Image (cartoon, rainbow, N blue to C red; front, top):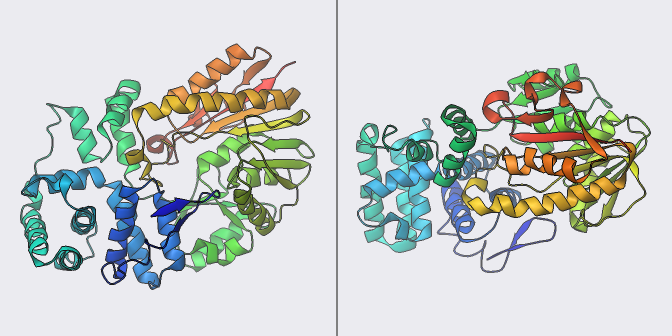
Length: 464
């Protein structure tokens, strides 16, 4: 069993991580164990993986393989299951969960990891199943995987001319309901391009802390470490790297030269445009990425009150602020819907959302969401936004943001807000951000158009 702590982490109970260690040994066995736990619970994949990387005894190479197998298998889960269902004699869906996951990680290696020999991928999974269920089940799994391998170039997928929704769903590994929803909203072409972007391996974005160093110093460090990178065309002091395994242990991170933050989140902070010596309230601050950048934009002057409902989550903000050399951030534990304070200059409402712009980095979200979840989130978002309106002084700013592409959580909430609070007006995002990330006066990024997460932000001015 896995239990969720108030800080959002997941710790194993006595019967979980230590159970049957010999069955789930090595990177592949550990991957099967994590994937099975993910499938059976409400645990977040990144928390399960983070715990294993922190406490497990794998060497660095095996940790890298484990990370690739876990994230890659979940990223391509829909396509993998389509193939396995077609080759499995019986009902693949009714297999024991660890057996399914042993087959999935083998097929993921066969289809997507060209450097791993196919026999190695198959044999490792067969051995896991043998330890779990014995020789008979292992023989079935071996037969299925080798049959897939023999017919890899002949696999039949849904016909795009007969059912393009089903085709996109399988080929790009997204839930069918979501593909249908997006084609209705964005059209076939943009939907396909977004789905394609969502299944790419994510890049890691490093935002330079300009209070501590210059972009040149960070770029020289990356070059010295032979880490390929590109500067973001949207924010030149943000560098996108394809991989940096131990970012937390790196010199540039420990010295506070960089923060890990997607460019879209950084752009939302730029849109807020806080000034030196202002007072800012960040209503949903943890883990602190936007809070840190706001403090940097304010030249570490004034005051930022960073809130989170759970006291335990505030430690991430405190430790991050210390690492980055930011002294203006104060933390408080409070509910963003009801928090009271004298009116301030800027209020940030970075609200809980569906996360439908972050599938590349968090592939598990697309399999855990239901169509109804979006509408369930809207009332909470509006409660927080309403409270933000009460916390800002005349002439002050409310900055609303999400990490999703869903209109109900984005533009429709802003339309509702402007009708409900006529003493506010929308400040055109083009006054602060590159035009290519602006839409209808707000910031809206898409993975396939901007090379960032899908995100939204709106700058709202209290006029009286």
